[in-house]
Amino acid sequence: MPHSSLATQSSSPALPQAPMPGPRAERLACPTDGSIPAGPARQAAPSVGEPTAGADHSGAQLPAGLAGLLQDLVVRPVGPDLVAAIEDLHARAFGPGRFTRAAYRVREGLPPFSGLCLAAVSGERLAAAIRFAPVLIGGRPGAELLGPLAVEPEIKGRGVGQRLVGEGLAAARAKGRRLVVLVGDLPYYGRFGFKVVPRGQLVMPGPVDPGRLLALELQPGALADYCGKVEADRSAAG
Image (cartoon, rainbow, N blue to C red; front, top):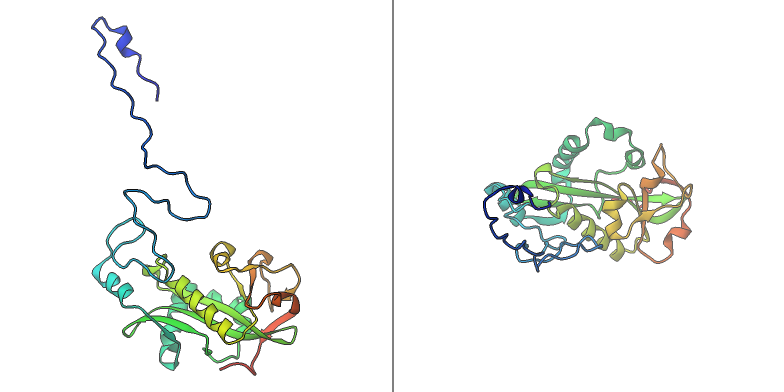
């Protein structure tokens, strides 16, 4: 703001003006890669899969129960013992509308989990879960449909979902899967290498926003080998 001119209109001697402080030396230009700039008052951002248990992004302390939940999280394969808890989480996270989504229709008739499905648990408490379902694309095997990914609302934004995605993709690659497809948000999944599928290359069993139909090549050039209808691969389920 400009200095006030009131002092020049007074008959009293003007007081000497204190020098305006210059810019703080530690202030850094904002990076373009989405990272958090370092500075005296900031801590380094936690890496994927290493959520800071005691504080949220604003630095506020979490309730002791939630801090303990994050500290004790273990990622494990999904088994029959978790199916009911995962279904309850899906119901609370997505509501009944999930049954009408195109991705859900692809998975209809498949077992509720496959060998690539993962969950984050703390003791007997479910914190998050991710599903992978084997699919055929144009009759060709070797692809997986990712989703849904669900995280308990109270611990969203703390890297739990990112950890599940990262570990799930690594397991799919190790298993020799060639391609992973999903319907989701590019700003989130783009960090893992997902890209928008060329319009018309893949056909889902229902309406899908073309900008949200994404694919990740686990083997270079794999996407070019797939074209056509996406449907469950029941021969690879289990």
